[in-house]
Length: 601
Image (cartoon, rainbow, N blue to C red; front, side, top):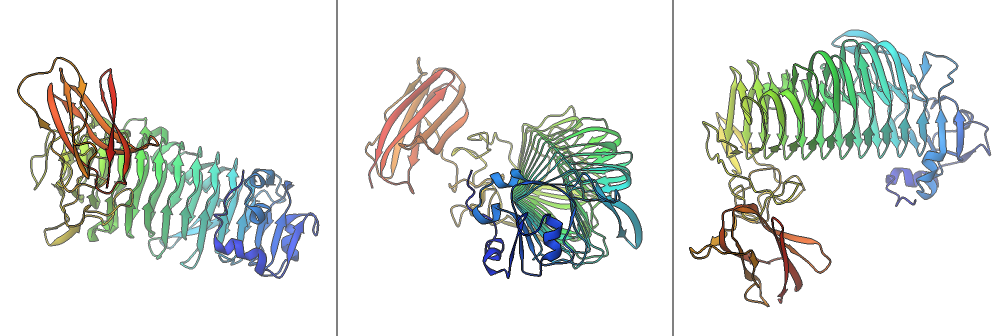
């Protein structure tokens, strides 16, 4: 299959601007021999095959790549394998190493990296040196690199005191290293440790970018503390930053004594932006003592953390004493300055004992325009649990609906700190706060878009001052659409912004109850730009009314809600749509009917 080269411009240009291309095995018999013969600016171009070796970049600014670099054919990636299962030194079992001060002009692209067992080294945390084994597939130590379009799989760190990064590990003792990890598949890697264990897929102990990767089916096992498939942290004394964006972090597992952040853990001295990721269906299989963050955990963070527009769905913590099935914010030192911001996220179908969707413990956080629905807590706080004497949570423009728990199914607050809930839709209501509503959000679909009649439309707040601090709705929604929409209106409640400034009223017609289901022809027809659609239902039922174009693509959801028996009319404004034929379709229980209408500009 052909890949329209999404390889970065840097990768594309390297082939043509290099002094030399060294062909493997044409010019040199092994990849390492090609690296040894290369000079800065060269490309080591590797033919398809299985190469049993462990390679070291030797500090060179070179590109080592399969023929994927030349034509973008992804079949080269699986057919060009570096197998590091037979290292000459078992303490240096990483398949690929960057350990001589390399920078991001040292590029690895287009391989399957497998069979690695990691390299023994050390790292510093608050002035203390700790031994560690890391980087089963790729190990970067006091160096930088660009790792792009690889399959990094079936690498495993054997039991060690501290084990990090079954797929990739980056350790930098300082603030100068930068690791770029983009467009890779990182799967079926593992780590095992007796003290600290983390990053079955990736452990990043430096600044970097983790963008557009598939991180799946990685595992972490430990006797004590175990952290997620992707682990991003740094010494609090440092000033590292990380971007974690547009990744799929799914179907990873953890087990140990204290287990945290199965999908992703961020914390320490790293300032991180966690944006647009799908963190879903990760599982904590067992935890002897306690567990936090089935999907995402922010752990003892000293930096600024921005969690924006992520999908956090179906993460489960099975064992007792578990917290934050979707997200856990735990003992975050940055919180005194409101440096943790959780906005535009969809948190749904997650499960834990406490805080099925979210747990906020001894942390200060802004939570704005989130959709937290259908999560489950076995004890309390189906939607969110806020606890700890230092917790301070501000919740704005958010939906808490359909969450379940034996106690406090939506919001559970057990803190001597503070919680503020304003302009939010909370099922069953919330006893304090401004602008809150208790109304079915009437989602139009399983993606949690609002139907046109949703009471959440226009019911949010754009800016508000609370205790001397200003809070602002994000300028864009979960999908990147402008908020508010239209301009000049108030923002919606929830992660996704409707194009309407206010909900469209569905008006009943007359007092007589109909005896049959009916969808009537719209009027006027043709129309420009508004038309009225009438329908009837003899019994209370769920009504879905949608509009489609000639290609069968959904262009509008007019109704998606439970309605009492009656005859109704709906005025639809097709502003923004092109002239042409459209179809409107209704579904009520077993009744389905579709009619045609014509928009003429």
